[in-house]
Amino acid sequence: MTNDNGSRELGPEAGGTPSTGMSRRRFLRTSALAAGTAAIAGPAFKTVAADLVESDDGQVVGYTDTPMQPWAPEYHVHDPNRPWPPEIDPGELCCPGEISQGPPSDAIVLFDGEDTSAFEPHEWRVEDGVLVAHGDDIVTRESFGDCQLHIEWMAPDPPRGDRFDRGNSGVFFMNNYELQIFDSYSDKVFADGIAGAIYGQTPPLTHPMRPPGEWNVFDCVFTAPVFNGNSVEQPATLTLHWNGVLAHYNTIIHGPVAHRGINQYSPHPPELPLMIQEHSNPVRFRNIWIRRLDIKDRAAV
Ligand code: MG
Image 1 (cartoon, rainbow, N blue to C red):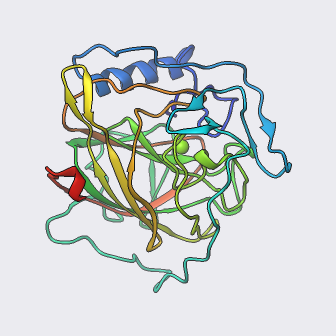
Image 2: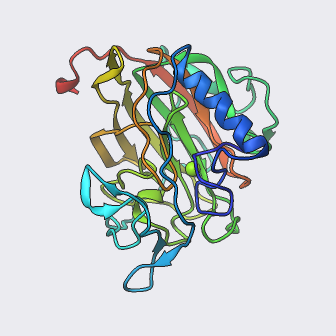
């Protein structure tokens, strides 16, 4: 189980604080990978007390003892009072028993329903053509920077996981930047932790989630951060179509994922592996493919 930087019992990104046992080893391994040979710059965590609180209307849980977000200064990280985006019905998947879009000819297929050799050795299971999260995170053998990613996922049915850790997974671009996967169809968690959120930073524009037991489709365009020495010259960005609905448009990613805190950018290689999170929930995946991009002019994205 990976570490999004919060401790196991704290919240949806449990897997936690890199303080003990496997979690700490995992964090150090991930961090070292992310940083290449460079040292991690700056404090990685600003974690404080661990009390989940309810929103003013009692409908959502989150934290109010976390830092304020410089990019959304009226909200704490994981603020329960941050409004959710509109919840909409994305319409029906054309062919529920089939994949929605096969890989184009220039794609690198990461999972085709059978072969998982694009990933480092892992414990995930293939069941009836579906890849099921199990044991630990799954990491690609190849590295990627700018990319287009297609991935289909299904939250466990019936819902699985503690209320604040329900159907948790996530796509970690460059092993650092998390696009959240979560059963936010069944669970009202803080807006920057719902499915489609850039975890701990920015909720999606809308929440067109299909319920547990149905397939959700993420089509992503990710641009890698560009560094100039120890500073970030261009931050990473994400555009996301979720079930065909625009959920992010060139959204700035403000640094590596953090749970209950804010992480600063730290220089890393231009390409790093893609990771899919295991979070003790049997989230299911199919039809995963990726295309390398080389986007020079970020303003034109
Ligand atoms: Mg996650």
